[in-house]
Amino acid sequence: MKTRLLAITFAAVSLAALTFLRPAKPPARSALPTPSAAKTILNSTHRHREWVNVPAGDATVSAFIVYPERSDRAPVVMVTASQQGASDWVRAVSDQLAAEGFIAVAPDVLSNKHWIDAVRAYAVALPAASGVSASLELDANVTAEAWWRTVAYLNSQTGNQPVFGTNPNVPEDHSTHIMMAMAQATSDVQPPAAGPRGYPQGKLPELPAGIFTAKSTLLHSPLRKEFVDIPAGSVKLHTWVEYPAGNDKAPVVVVMQHGPGLDDWQRALADQLALQGFIAIAPDLFSGLGPNGGNYDSFEGPDDVLRANGKLPPEEGVRRYKAARDYGMKLPRANGKSATVGFCAGGGFSFRFAGEVPEIDAAVVFYGGPPSEAIMSRIKAPVLAFYGDDDARVTATMEPAQTAMKKLGKSFEARTYLHATHGFLEYQDVGGNPGASSDSWARTIAFLKQHTVRD
View 1 (cartoon, rainbow, N blue to C red):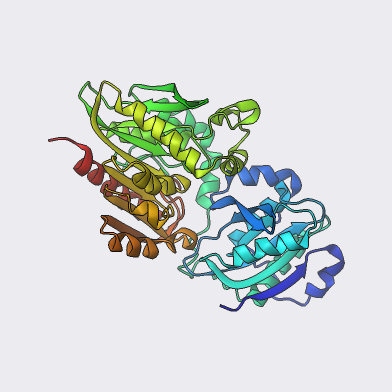
View 2: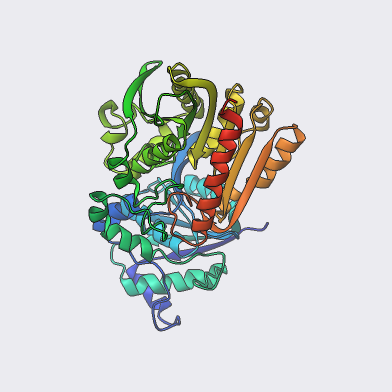
């Protein structure tokens, strides 16, 4: 695909060139973030974002990428600001561009054109990219009006067509999240409702908590749970362990964390697995990688946790998850069967772990990428995978994974849900996420029981 480049300078001195644009009223779904609000945006955004390390000659350049919620390919916008690199503000602006339908990329580079070009080449080659890219240079003197005019210009020049509300590639806005976030303090101190309306109004018994019901779910769970520190080489792997009711033996399920780490939602998900009959083992993969060698709770927020992904080689992640599984298998209540369930980055680990530790009995992958074919060839367990249609970044990997697993003679079942986003099980109120959450979780529990519950 031919790549088309567009350069836009977003600075006060160039805004006059944009005043002819129509419509006369703001077309943007997003808002221009202020520097003071940047960290709040980065710690609360629902959008799929990641840090990547891009080769650039003899160097390696870090870059922040945030993806839109759409099933088709999107234009890439390179976002920079003088002497800022991938600062909080630059990345918050990138998040808002993703709300407009762009793949936004913030290279952590001050001025090296060669490195920026290397990051651009990497981003444009992504399966979710349309082959069109633009450059947006920020200036501290920008205004709200400049923002929506620039968004309109980017749309017109890159062919971006985010027809929100009618375009099935872009789901409804996230106003529900805003309302739920405002009510968070109240819901945290009250038992989660279990009425027929379900999430986000309340948690349903047969579904994990969503992001806004996770904390209250943990506060009111009746199950036995504890943190343990598992030896994993030179690290003590801080791990959440939760047991099903009673004293019967049960399968071990290793819960593999999403990018934001071992947060309330991941532990509430472990709680749901325990409620449904499994010993849930949820390790803090970032143990020892926090400030001053701390664990997950030493980070200031999800944005800082995400940076830790770049400090953990995949091989080390597998080693830590293996230590967690080994611990679980030695528990007195373990029935000798084990499985993995992973989300986002953890979904990729769950897929990979099935090849690295082929003695597991089942693997479930929620919106995670596949490992290499060499690792796939060692898989013995059945793999069940779920994807959201409005998550082109990850869903583009589904068909290649199906092809490879079929060629290797492996058991692989994959489902894609229309209008569902990345992280649909966490953000259960958006677009097609309610149906995706209900169906995928019911299938997950049935699959796990089929392969791990002894007769």
